[in-house]
Length: 298
Image (cartoon, rainbow, N blue to C red; front, top):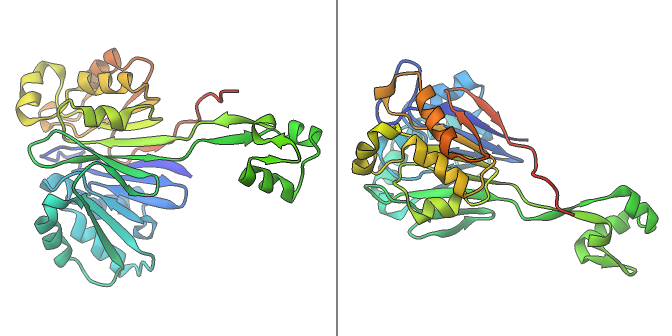
């Protein structure tokens, strides 16, 4: 199963209906928790998210609204007896903050720290790119390899069945039959998480070709000067990011409390610049299914 569970959508100041950040991506057998802000443990309860589902925690940076929920989440994992390793990814410059947060959490889980100081792969299928904020910040991109969808009629016509199908997939050809003769190309799906940044090349690289893009949308376009001052994106800029990357679905979040609970105007501004992307203005506890695979190219 692949889906995004929204645990919090507020930026620096929470509101009565918006908690600080928190996003759980369920990706096949993994659960990636992004930027657990204050109160994430409680939000998980309301969302029906078990601590045992979390296999990786990814911090974009160490501002409090993106990491102060970490001790509570780790403590809950220890209380629930999580046995599998849990990987914590974060900018190396935030080492002191991360160590402090980890030190006050309850011990008892196999927590493995993976700081990064530059863009590139940090785990199989997972990579980071530097963003442009007031402190060192990285966005994340998760992608599966491209593959092939087998066509049963072509397999039968070629006389390939049973274990030979797996052999053909592994080796690329079998008895003169090529994999591409009995299948169609299947582009791998991808997800990107862009938070707390001004416009930059790193954000563009993360968003490129994504099926699902989570992007901060702290300010509306009328407050572009504030966005520039604090190095955040406006709604229109988030939409432009999705359009430039040919994104399938854009999820807006990290809203400033100045707009209250109604962010319709921000969603409209993003739609005006997002091209063909579907735009979703996230609310706490939304469950967003991963988009269907894009058109298979013969």
